[in-house]
Each structure stands twice: as C-alpha cells, then as structure tokens.
Length: 417
Ligand code: NIG
Ligand code: FE
Image (tube, rainbow, N blue to C red; front, side):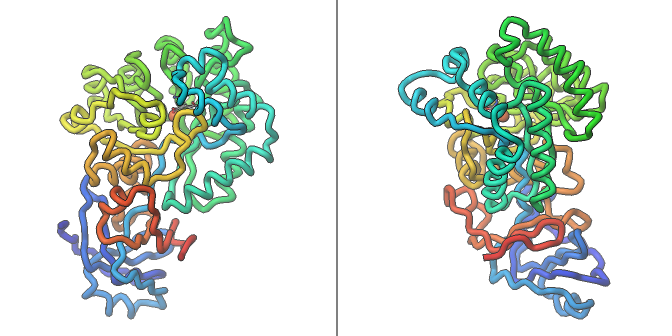
C-alpha cells in the first residue's frame, strides 16, 4: 500500500470520484490507495487521498460527484503500438497458417504485408477512415485513452501520406490522445523488388522530409529483419529521422536476431518492440540508453512463436516493459487490451502488476508521454477508467472481459454504462 503524499486540497474541483479504490501506477508499482477519493480540476488530476477529506472537497465550488460504488480507478490504457489503418482482410492467410504455412513463407510469396499494401493503396481516404474509425471505437471501449498508430501499409509517398492524414482525422474525431508514427520502412514494395536501397532512398530523401514538413507524425519506426530491411538500411532511415527531429522506434528481433535493438538504442530510441530474439548485449544497450521494451503477446500467439522475449533480463536490467495489442491484419488482429494483458501473463510470464504497468505507465514511456500520461498523480492528465472489478488483477485474470463503468479523458467523461 502506498503512502499518500499530503497534497493541498484544490480550491476548485470539477469532478470528484468517491467510494473508489485506486491503483495509481506511481513508483513502478500498482501503488494502491483503498477507500480513496480523486479530484479533477479542468483537464488535470488535482488531488488524490483518503475519503475522510471528502467533506472539505465537497465544499469547493460545485463539483460533479461520481460514486464509484467501490469500483477501481486505474489510469486509462496507453496503447503504444498499433497498425490500425488498413484495408482488406488477411483471414485467408490465417487459414493458410493453420494449414502449416509460416508468416515468412506467406510473405515471400507476395502475401503478408504486401497484400494489405495493395488493398490500402486501392482504398480511398474516406474508406480507410471508416475502417479505422471502427477499430479506434473498439479500443476506446476497452479503456484505451492514448493510442499510437503507425503508417506502413502504403509504401509509396501518396499512400503513406493518405494513411497519416487518416490518423490526423481520427485524432480530430476521437477524444483519445493519438500519436502518429511513420513506418515507411515496413516492407519492400513490389515496384522496388530488386532495389531495396532505392526504396530506402525514397524513404529518406522524399517521404521523411515531406512527413516532417506536414507535421503529421512524431516518431519513425522500421522493420529490421531478413524479410524486411537490413541493419545498414535501418541505420540510414534513423540517421535522416534523427536529423529531422523525429523520435525513433524499432520492430526489432521479432523473427531473428538482427542486432536492431542495439542500433536503435544508439539512436536513443523511445522503444524497441517484439524482441523475442534479443541478445544480452542488445538488452544491455537498451538499458544503457533507457529504451523501453514493448512486448506484443498477440503477435507471439498468432505466429505460434516459441521463443519468448527475455523477460528476466528486462527485470534484471530494469528495462521498462510495455504491453500492447500490435493491432494489425496479419500477425495480431487482436482488438482487446484485457485479452492482451492475460496473454502477457500466460504466454510471456509477466505478473499481473507488470502487465498492468505495461499497459499504462510503461506504454506511456514507450511513447515519451510519461510526464503527462500513464499514472494517477496530481498534475497529470485526467485520463482514467472506473472498473467494476474486485481487484486490479481481475483485468488480467478475467480474460477478455471489459467491465468499464466510466472512461474519462482529459477531465471529460466519454463513456458510462
Ligand atoms: O508488428 N512486424 C511487422 N509488422 C507487424 C505485422 C504487420 C503485418 O503482418 O501486417 C507486426 O507484427
Ligand atoms: Fe507492429
């Protein structure tokens, strides 16, 4: 149980949550405050403490009181890795994989990411927006209040920009906080089949400067893997991205050890993601450069991976572990954060506390948002969820259930049952 810091009662309270327990996620732990009250002023958490102070808070000017009936308040989930703007379906590949084909085999035969690229290029911006809106809506209903979305199913200037535009439109339409990541170096488009360096030139010389000029992404990601791009090609992308002032992220060591994590760490990446094949030296570099590890149990599960990311090493080296759906049409068509929490525990060996930290404060770290998101502390954004559960661990244990009572984003209520 956490010590409550004596914070001054705010002069003005807009919303006051009472009869609640809070898992604040402060200090890298659940940091539970039982029988708590929580005050929101404007867009910000202004006070958290024991319910005995409530009479004084009620005397402040006209707060809206929300009785949580002994429910639990947690920070809204920070979903730090999705590819949710796509057209088409890959359910046929799912069937092929059930019949024994591997992800790499399907990719080499022109399926996989390439098939989504064709469908996404052929879709209009409006069609993509409708498709992606449905997915964002589903995530909002899962208690996700911050969301990262990558481009990467365009692989030409026009469709990468179209995708990033759709992400901007989603940001305007939905109340949740959205971070856009440019993933031009996701796969080699067929028109560059024999010329990967030519494609990397297009990414670095044309796409990155244009994305920067339009201000439509904050981070740059790449897929460093034999079926995608080499270490040298990834380095070129990062050099340009860094010069242009983007944050860096990497799909690293998902299917093999390509030493991508060490490279990304040298560029002070925010996160390296997947990491099943991470070496000890790669992990040490991540620790040295304060890089978050994003674990994606949905992809691990869908690809029937057997090699797990080195969770014990992350613990030993105190590397923050984030957890995410990796929502995408190929390797992780998973739309449920609570299901992912369960998978993180059952498949990757995280404790419930680690999984919950992974979907909140460590998700925020993986996006560079940890000063404003991911934990319930005075001064942070009022992004939170009231859950109808008996303990925070229920969110990992009741696989796939989402018993939400209230979602608040930046001080405004967006969903109640
Ligand atoms: O995170 N690894 C590369 N990108 C996605 C897969 C995308 C796809 O298969 O469409 C991932 O797993
Ligand atoms: Fe991914």
